[in-house]
Length: 308
Image 1 (cartoon, rainbow, N blue to C red):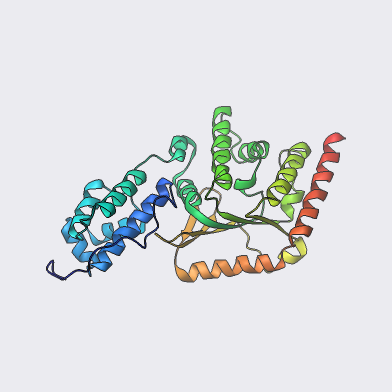
Image 2 (cartoon, rainbow, N blue to C red; image 1 turned 180 degrees about the horizontal axis):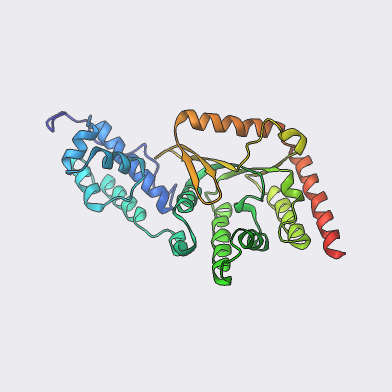
């Protein structure tokens, strides 16, 4: 399509504003969605945009999906190409770019955080809904510090004490999103074995069960237990997480965790398949009252064991 193609008046009004999603990761996604909307409103293809800034079509595509950090020159060249002139729109794009280029809080933990985990934390920080199923341990967003310490030491027995503490600090920082004004709705489905497995010993487990009970009572947090006899034929063998985001970028993602890596799925067919698994798990899980009763029973058991 040629550069002389008549364009509609550019507008970024329907795109989510910076005040609704303030993390750098969210700003990258919103900025990308804004650029995509401007391109489509102008009737431009990826090839047109790529030629305008002497880049590849794949680079434009990654920029629009929020999968690569934006370069200011590219953004402003595209904005000019799309004909944005009004001060309000230019100011909002500038603010989005400024926020997108900020160092996220988790960048300070790059020494103890692999790349695949960096992506998850960025997505958690901008999610509106998180549904997770865990098989072996309490979900990271709900772990108490001593439980985290036991998990880290078990997985990294040769780690120096300083590294262990850094990893604990990182995980506790991740949990701050659950108290944020724009916190996501969290649903945590726990295999019953998590309530039986003595991670860190009885006193640590008792504290962890008390924490789960307290979190379960909070608004926008649902904790459900999947009993042993209900999981057969339904539960997957490894953890999985579904994340949903506000408009202004990819709307959904599936995160599958392995021992030393992770897989991120964004194809519609994959998302639907794993969402169906989570829905089946929800259907067979205990209700809130029964799940809390199981947590209280586990807490009493471990408290008694700690006192022996």
